[in-house]
Image (cartoon, rainbow, N blue to C red):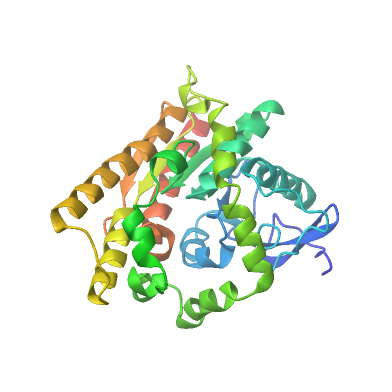
Length: 326
């Protein structure tokens, strides 16, 4: 692939940016930027390409410039010739290199989903080291993981067992409920069959535990005063437990053996409580926070209720614009 000769700050573009020795696919949409205008950057979940976020981008780019990209080995991005472990820290370094190479400057609003939240917070670490933390003017954590998620919120073993052999898009109802076009829904299956995707997905998933531990050692959530000061931080909560319940119920209908109903309900109630507590901890990053509940979504809010995320970004933009006018 050849890098695209593009002014990424103006016009709408889909192209490639060279970082060191390979190219990453980048898309930018929305109004041309003027000095001081924020740009929204989407950080996807583990093993997830940016195409899943098109419905969100379509809604948001009416108001603000929005950038999406595929990490090395995902989507249409190339694999790096000299692979490093895809830890959250290394992925954040890749993002920083991409922004520099594309000449996409701050201020940035970061929207991150699930494992993407670990990457986003490592990006904060990097920006803090470079004395550039002021580049971040807002963050939206969508079903965001934190340093304790992997160790404390492990999937129920019954769900793990009963999900084996399941089409999870169908079992969770996500295939029918997502707002992607039919051809893009089918594209999720096709992508999963690509060898490079499978290799990259396995590598990223294999680094979740180490990335979580590494982030936890930095104790961002304990900082006093908060790391981001008064920069607006939003937490968008879906219902991952609902996904687990649907997988479990589908398996029961197929004849798999479950556990007593009362015990199952207690487990899911505990899961919901712990999940919410872990996600809300991201509000400790700032003195200015917002919480939004995606009432009709499971874990993948961006695919079912992107408008909920858009509303939180708009809140951040309003806070930013009001502070600039003071």
